[in-house]
Amino acid sequence: MTDVLDKDFEKITLKKIGAYFGAEVSGADLSGEFDDVTFSEIHQAFVENEVLVFRDLIISTDDQIRFGQMFGELTVHPFSPNSDKIPELIIFDNKEDNPPFGTDVWHSDETFRQCPPLGTCLRALDVPEVGGDTVFASMTAAYQGLSDRMKNFISGLEAIHDFKPFKQLFDDDDEGRRELQRFELMYPPVTHPIVRTHPVTGNKSIYVNPQFTIRVIGMNEIESRSLLTDLFDLAKIPEYQYRHHWYNKTMVLWDNRSVQHYAVHDYWPKRRQMERVTMEGDRPFSSEENVIPDALKSRKSPQPIGANVNHGGHSPKRQFVRDLD
Ligand code: SIN
Image 1 (cartoon, helix red, strand yellow):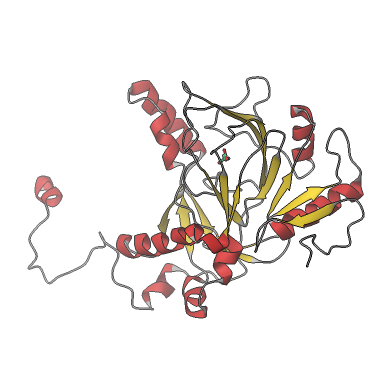
Image 2 (cartoon, rainbow, N blue to C red):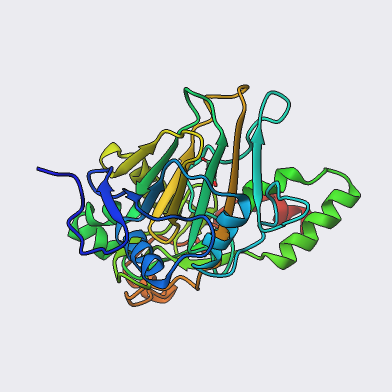
């Protein structure tokens, strides 16, 4: 049995690297311009395999940028360490005096945006021999592993995403609070379907993540937290994962519409230097019917916490109401 994927590709060769998803690409020269056939084969391999690995690349930052641009406009991350000269380029140069921040949590990139990026391309410049892996989880596999009952239960639900982890980057003084407010106006919380339909493959995947997803619409806080915790935990199931160990000159391209990732921070304080570009995506949609909150209520869910429940006037007043009297 061979692990070369049996695809009718003319320009590239694909080797399977994970049981469910992930493939290594060889045969493509990514330095300089490349032809449409090569790009369309890489694009097909990308959406079908969700994570693509390119090894032993002798390419420049400009080549990486050009490669990213073939998939779409590059985005500028509002909170990441971006290059001064090229704001679309994120530079992770983590070392003793610059510990990594915020990537050791399961996430899909920037889901706090209305249109989160379709993909991310990360290239290793100087990585430690041991540690510093990136773990990917196929949320398509996670969805497919659910029981029909669970698929039915989450069908049509939506959740709110927010840039909450980055709020701690703002100073706790007047100026910091003003700045934070400015960003909150630019990036208000957004709603995405919990089951996302991939715009190219039509595959369904779980589209909530512990970094940015804060609440299921139409559920009370306890229900929302418990459903989200169960869905977040799916990324931790080893069968749905591919763990990537980095070597210098390796580049990984992942599909944010169908995978989540977790950067393992076990290498610090050793140095790990990477460059990243992120490609603009479209607004997530679901091919499932939306469940509006009233429809949820008719499924007899308990009243949301904080809802104006009338207990017949016998319950004691709450403190904030007393303070208003
Ligand atoms: C990221 O979340 O984009 C960073 C991934 C990594 O550093 O491995």
